[in-house]
Length: 77
Length: 462
Ligand SMILES: [Zn+2]
Image 1 (spheres, each protein chain N blue to C red):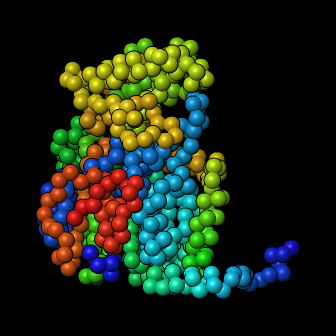
Image 2 (cartoon, chains in turn blue, cyan; image 1 turned 45 degrees about the horizontal axis):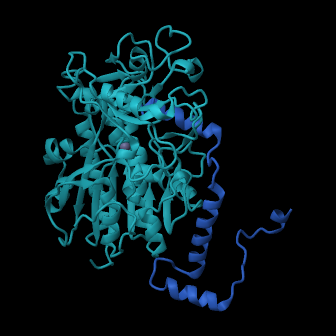
Image 3 (tube, rainbow over the protein chains, first blue to last red; image 1 turned 135 degrees about the vertical axis):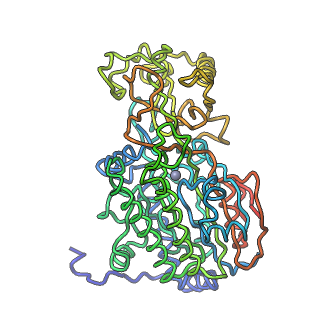
């Protein structure tokens, strides 16, 4: 398995230097500490949208737990 | 407004203007400081005034119709029983912190529902009371969870056993909930970089529902000289002290907002929605209920049913339309006629003394700018929200003083609170009129010098 061979939780991805330089310029003075932080945020955002698109993000069991709790709270009967 | 300011939003779910601005203000020194030194007023909530969708309406500046969810549970299609649950992933509109993230501002977001599963942002986020359990991944980034467990002893989502007669234990649970969440927020404010911090406390809502009848002399079930007479007041005092701690961490650079998603009012009773629909000939069951029982869809005789309802703090009415529902009987061309007839009858409903209750039945397309997904055919607020909607049948009357979900003393009210305070005194002071829940989002962006997107429906409070 790929997983057992690679112990390091992070991987290196190569991007063109001009793009990197542009990114550095964009994030200067922003709340992003580095181009890496910015890239990770943007990618996670895209991935979370893709993962959840059009499907239930919770299992039936999880929904049932929440539904019971809400019912007990009186939100619906 | 210069953009070097920070903004802290303290959300108190269900905090009520009559209690905060009037009744107990003098006992709440920190809130009093914010009210007297800043601007404040009623905050008009969504219709319906319910936690989901209200907080998201506030943070996206969109109405429930645009958001496409109208409560916790929503119809997935026109079948009788398929529902989808409003989780964080059904929120497609951008929140204030999504926009701030794009601008490189860092946020801390704690418990703003619906927030499970946690979605990425530039900063740190903890999910809300709609999280399945402590084993769930309730933080963004994922690694934050172990840090919260180590430094704050974990994160409490909600009071886990609300329907209990052990009122002593419930009070302790509500206190513990508030202490934990204020503590977690304080920890994040002290240990993470942030420009924007928002936190929603649920304890206020839970204590209103659990203890309202002990202090409100107008409550039908008012119990004089109860040892819980001051339970709600004492809780507000506790919250006020904890707000004071957050204010001192925030410092003078931070503009502070205190807001609620709706208010609370005494509950006079329950209106048995389906019982009424049966009496009026709109709903027919296959088998007459023995005792009190929930209306199960497979016990409804759809060939003789025009409409059915569901219970909660407000009523949702669904119509059985030919060609739309699987066994629909209302011809499409009669839809509006039948719906108008229902509106008229619902709004004429009387209380047990025969007085008109002040019920309002809203057509979604009349109150929302657009209607995405499937809204109820009517959204019904019974008796000016002094009455809840009871879905269960078999009460033998359309009015009940008992609740089909257990003891509950309070219902939601249409108006919450809005307070905005600038320690540097650069904001306008005094009482505000006509503030709407959708105004909060653009107001926050404006404090950062960011022009609100054009599709935000609210206006900037200045
Ligand atoms: Zn609420």
